[in-house]
Image (cartoon, rainbow, N blue to C red):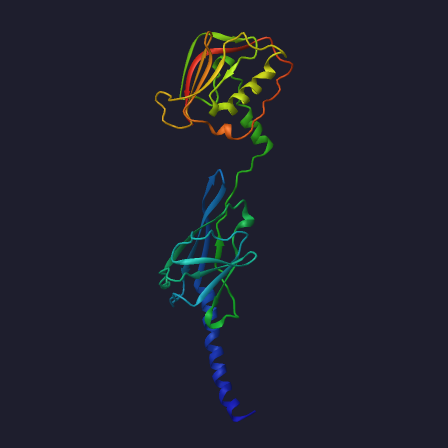
Length: 302
């Protein structure tokens, strides 16, 4: 062994001895907690609000930079959702990391201090989605991962709809008498029932301006299966019109009037979106001798 090697060996031993306590201290000093805060459900899907809480239990501060906490989870954080001046980044597959965000304002963690790290992730369906196996890596020793053994993920439960629970829910359902059902669906903002009814014994003539030609075609095809073949005319018409609806400013509002003598009139504020896509009517059977509609006046807005 050369003289130079003899001189360097003690120095290396000193460095190793100095580093070993620091990694052990880091392992024992940091406490990590995780919890599911809540869920947000929309028509487009769902997301979960979760949070880590990092606490420094040691005598030395955790620096503002120079470290990374790795963990495994099925879902990562959604972009821009992480708080506390930190970031959660994808590494590969289900491996992610918590890092001080550039310009995020994280100033380090003093002894005894805690910091809450909220974030939003995809909907967590069950316990298997909880983050697992966190460990910390310091920039001074990037090949050494120190497990954070003081880590606890708060349990959470999801309600599972079993056949028994569904039966109990369904058991309170009752048949609604026909007299209690609304004559128009979806529910209008205003409906006034009158006396008498409109009795259609044949397919009515459908009249409409040019901009409602698609609606007129749809109405005729929808009503046709309700009458026996060949029976047309001789009954009040079905009129489709475009114009103002009293008290309604929505461009998709409409007014429906059913009158025993004048027939059916539907007033649209504007051409409806339904006219922009093709529709097909169902087949109610071999037809019937008459279609009865109650006399009413209804207004609806979306």
